Length: 168
Image 1: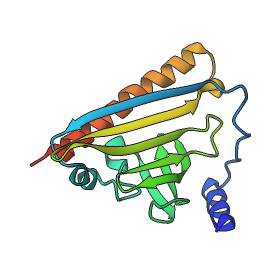
Image 2: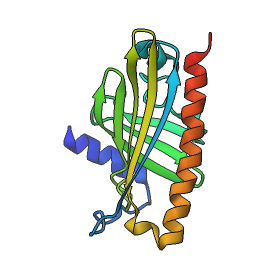
Image 3: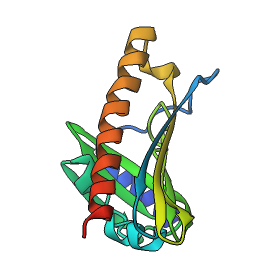
Image 4: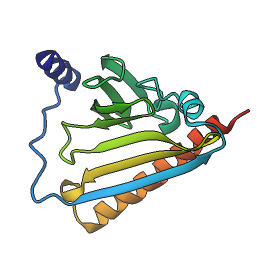
């Protein structure tokens, strides 16, 4: 299975060369996004497409999302197109109402976790967390710009998810 995943990832990269290991020392940045939902967690998860490994694409306005292997279970690979960039993402954790992915071939070693958490029997909360090593991003201004860009983009996506989950 490891050989298959590695081969699929390298094929997806095409002519792109895999980057070096995460630079050290690492300067990890974490962003958290949340939105309240007036539905039970399992219904919210279904409505935002949590069971679909590329379901997030419609909320993040990705140019494309292609499943390369698997269906979202551990080790699944997808190729997302963000602007001119095509990025391989691997599922590294999964629960019934969450998944975590990594971008192992980027110098910032980016990870994201998408989840819906129950608040009570009829309410839930969408939680999206990002973490990456900003060392390779550049100077302090470039790092701040990267954080602000993600802050705007992902909060908009989480708000769209909440609207879809809250719809009648």
